Length: 226
Image (cartoon, rainbow, N blue to C red; front, side, top):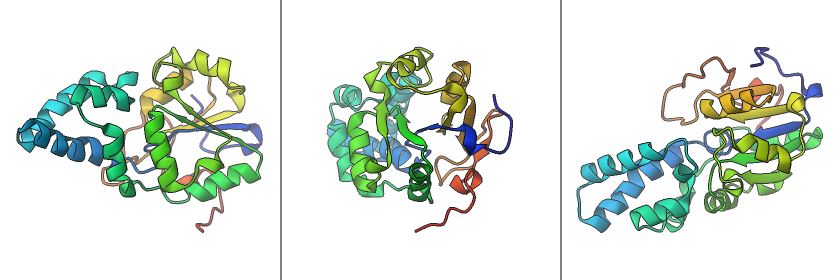
């Protein structure tokens, strides 16, 4: 783990960026999975909202850390719901964190390779890229569904290394999931940063020793919001 509080951008060539909770407020996803999906599910099954929430929470918890947790196809099948269509219904609630556009532009202007590295299913990626308009800001978009393993699983990282050319010592990963940072750490990624508040409606999270950022001002001086 790199414990230096500053980033030497001269050393960094590649930046891996998570999507939900890193570039976009995780409040959307928490609302969607914990409020909206249970509401629709309760109506479809003829059960009350509280029972639906408790039932779904148990199902969610059993899949956390696995790729299935992030898979819209899996949940559409399990819940007998069109998850992609439901996300489209509330997509206007998707929001970027402050300075995301400015940070991505800065990376482009300074010759850094910018890669969206997400566990989200491509259905979710497409919806959120359309809503936020940032697709063109990335050199590449990679979803872990392409490899069959989530980023927090050790099997993910050798597959990424075979597919994407990067040097561990010249790579920065920013993610809100500490388990992902730990996996990247085990596989040699040198520069690691954790998002302190992935969901703006919740308190700051524990980063377990990984250096946290409040916003992109913390790692790039002088960013000015458009």
